[in-house]
Length: 93
Image (tube, helix red, strand yellow):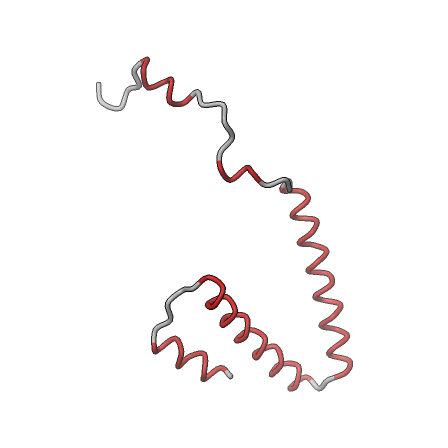
């Protein structure tokens, strides 16, 4: 019968070592709480900057921030960028 496990195959699935992704010391709940705190801080900082700037200036600054984050991620992760991708990023700025 195809697809059935034999007794020898069961030994491969009894490995007690944790999966590689569970090496983090942060639990999901802790990461969600940290994410909520940072989201709240981002919202508060956005309201503070909106009080100091006009809505158009805020929108331009937000667009520039997003473009810089794209460039930073490209540099950090080393992803290749096509010429059309560069053109798109230049048009954003």
